[in-house]
Amino acid sequence: MLRKLGFCVFTMALLTGCEWMIPEAPADNEILDGPVPGLSTSESARFLAGDIAFNDEIFTPETGLGPIFVATSCGSCHLGDGKGHPFTTLTRYGQTDANGNTYIGLGGPQLQNRAIPGFQPETMPAGIPFSKLTPPATTGLGFLDALTDAQILANADADDVNGDGISGVPNLVNAPPYFQPGPQHSGLDGKYIGRFGKKAAAVDLLQQTVSAYNQDMGITSVYEHIDPLTHLEVSPEVDENTINAVVFYLRTLKAPVPRKSAVTTGSGVFATIGCASCHIPEWTTPASDIAALANKTFYPYTDLLLHDMGPGLDDGYTEGSAETYEWKTPPLWGLGLSPNSQGGQYFLMHDGRAHSIEEAINLHGGEAAASRERFASLSQEDKDALLKFLESL
Image (cartoon, rainbow, N blue to C red):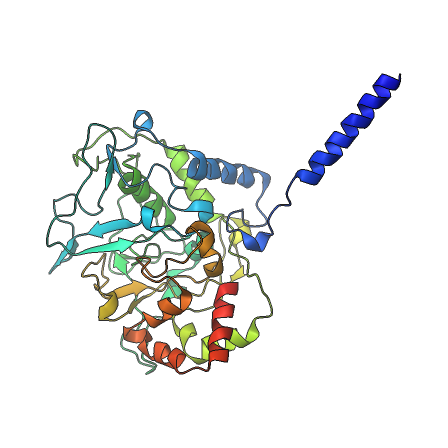
């Protein structure tokens, strides 16, 4: 009896000790991954399936990797659904002609700089315009996907009619043959507004996902089954259910949660120097087939439009109707958490060249030059307040 009692006491102490040793889960505003609130039971199951495919599935040559590739999984470029690191930076290249953007027949549109055994990775052809692109964070994309073309176009001002020096324009792209327009897509002269990618070249998250599987990992699907090495049609290497699960996962990742709700001084400075003209703070989604995304106000700090960023950010490379010096306004939400997925430091701008938020601001040119100069003329107190605000997003 005493032996049994002693065993029970020991067991209870062990369990209590283990409970004490288990670390607390991080606060919701300290991580980027996690589902949007309000998913149904079946939607939560779909989210989990997509989460596993995105973050846990690592491809090998036996499961279709390569033969040339950039990464072996989705999650390796978007650790914790955050921004990428220079190690996973992509190189895209091509050329333009009178008819728009054309990829030359030398391995474009993307450099596959790694290869499975027995194959050689690609090297950049000489004299070809190219751009380095750091993988973006993936959270909150479903909210941006839900916006209507009309909402995006409401902020376009190609001729700067209002005289504020800002001339945002949409990137009009040829949608892939598998694209199925949703109620949010209206189309213009047979083209559609791009929303995703550094130059907004992808019209929806399906195109973004399919392209990433094929160009980043050399994985063909039912949607895109051209081998990136031979450019010949081959059998799909990932099934349609997996692709659709990943798309649903990306649509239902939560929006980043701000970490300091009372950073008001910096928010005022942000608006005063003109940053909010392009980094529009607030949007509201229309109706959606996913109830958790419908009629929600969210704060991404982007207009999803292209802007002239000046010669310093002109890579000589383009996609869709974008000029070589034009870039989509990147969302700022989650900015302060970027170092968590970037090795403890910042790699900002489209190619990761900026190592601090202040350095990124100072690299703004073109339409953003006036805001950059206003930032430079701020008092140190106001600069610090602005940077503190941006780090809180």
